Amino acid sequence: MVSNSLSLNKLKTIISYILAIMTIIAFMVFVALRQTDDFSFAPFAPYRNVILNGIKNTILVSLISLLGSMILGFVLYLLQKSKIKYFNALIDVFTEIIYGTPLLVLIIVTAFLIGPAFNSYNRNLFGVLALIVYMSPYMKNVFKAAFSSISHDQYLAMDLFGFTPFQRYFYIIIPQVIRILMPPLMNNFSLIIKGSALLNLLSYPELFFTIDVAQSRNFAYVEGYILMWGLYLLITIPLSQFTKYIERKLSL
Amino acid sequence: MKKLIMVFFIILTVFTVSACSTTTTTNDSNNPTTTSLPPLRVGMDLRYPPFETLNLESDPEGISVDIADAFGEFLGREVVIVNTNFASLIPSLNAGEIDIIIASMSITEEREQSVDFSNPYFYFKIISLVNKDFAEANNITEDSSYEDLLAIEDSKFSGIATQVSATIPESYGKEVIISTNLGTAVESVAQGTADILLMSANPVVDGNRANPNTTIIVWDSFVSSPIGMAVKEGNTELLNQANAFIATFNETGGLYEILADKWDATIIEGLGRYGLEFFITQ
Image (cartoon, rainbow over the protein chains, first blue to last red):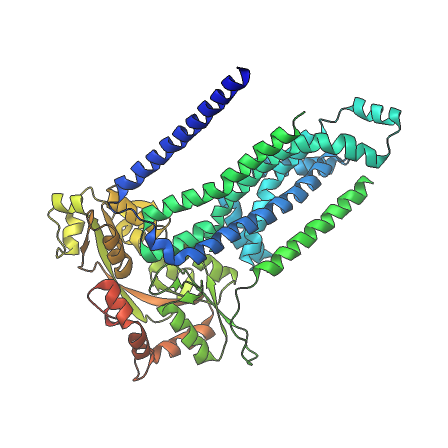
């Protein structure tokens, strides 16, 4: 009886999700058909490889930015915890400035002003650097929240039981920190993926840019933007589902 | 210990950054020539076919690309095409990232203040894409003149930031709704949030083809906008070379003939009316 009502519940959930997804698709179809009579993705077929390459580049810069901003974020975290007041102040000022700067502005300033000031015209590199710098304070906060979850008492307890450093990290600290680290980390990752679309301003061939180029040739603007929307969701939704899975797996 | 970790991470950051730089500098794939001259870096926005575009292999292609290659041959220098957003071309030129702009750029007074233009080598007739409902309400047809369009009060123009589509209507004191790319500029006319888009012939015709039920073309040209190459202010050496190069276009077997042979079919297919001569005559 209990298992019966459980499976019924599960069925209800599945049906509700299917209905919810269909509602959104119906809305998208409505929006698309209001703009153009003959909606078709066919004009984008010749650009399949170009767009696939764009997806690859989007994922590539996002991964580089994720790694880079994690490292820079960790450095910021250490500097913020440092006993040297100057470092604390520097991180505070830096964080304030980044929080108040639109990513778009940061990318343009980094690629067209800061890069040339150092005699470098590698626009793509500076675009990615801008993404890394932009995300680093958010990453710093992720680390701050994660490490503050290990209470002083736990360290005392570890001392008491005479844990070796390996045991401390492997059995006590890392399992707790990862659980707290993963969800905001993945949220930041999807922020990075979405933010990377702005690299199209530097003519970097990521997803937005490749579809923009295809649109400039086939003029299927409505279809192009819908396609773009769908493809970004195709990257970000599995990621957030994966995060939820990890969260469930690691929850105590 | 903590210091050690910090040093470790700083080193790691430096490595990551240098790794990025090696993965992103792959766009100068042109075969190296034996000349000792540095490559000529040519800036253009590869989103405006048939003049500047990317082919299906993501290689630069188009009339401006051919002109750039011919200029490189003329100078005996290797050519590197630097794909740059149109609005960023002049900042790139002034930052020293590119040597010359060959991007179907109209010679205008405002631009003349920050760059030096060559003699014109093309003339782009600026025609109009007009919202159909707006046209019907104001008795505008395909053969109306641009004075008819200007005479309409309360018209809203669609324009792309920094391009003639924005600067021309502004110079007449008209309201301009600014877009950042061609797509949104065309869509706003098709949807009626703006009434008129002034552009060179190709985007107007393509925009009309994509929205045949909501837009019409008014063929009378607003202005014949002279197109030139742009170099950094004071770079007279390259400017003189560019002008000497442009002077050869009209010769028999010159670049105009070569380009017409190669591109006439594409241009006629695109415009439905004219070939390359549409862009050479004033």
